View 1 (spheres, rainbow, N blue to C red):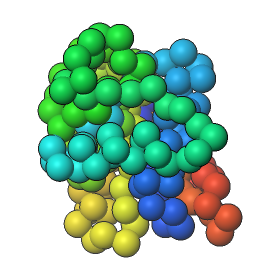
View 2: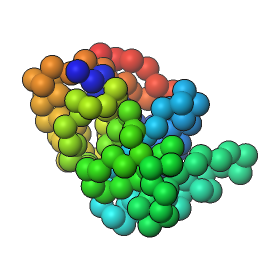
View 3: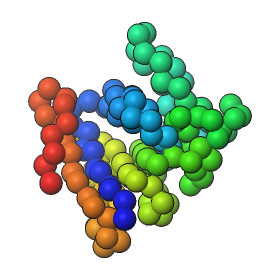
View 4: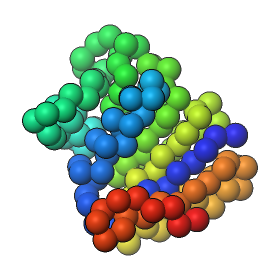
Length: 149
């Protein structure tokens, strides 16, 4: 079974939290897929990840970029995994595919959005029933992640 992590965004928005998590994964040599809730959101994240910090470079791409199998981070609004990712991020209420083939599944959800919180609870229950190893992380006052469950 996969390790499934739930990241509850309470202090920083997705745009500030996601790059650091992706940098950690890429630094460990893990390929990632980021599944957004819509094509528009996927395109916005693609643009953001090129410019989120002047002193950083996070290699990533979409189907439109080609050579998807070579991308360390692949952005999509679908269920494909063309780069052989071992970590799947689910953002903006994206519906997860079967996470069993992944080492990790990572749900990031906005704590200020009641529908996103309700979705996360449903996914938590489904992942637990599927037998995945689940952990819950929340941002502290400084915006750092603390393991809560």
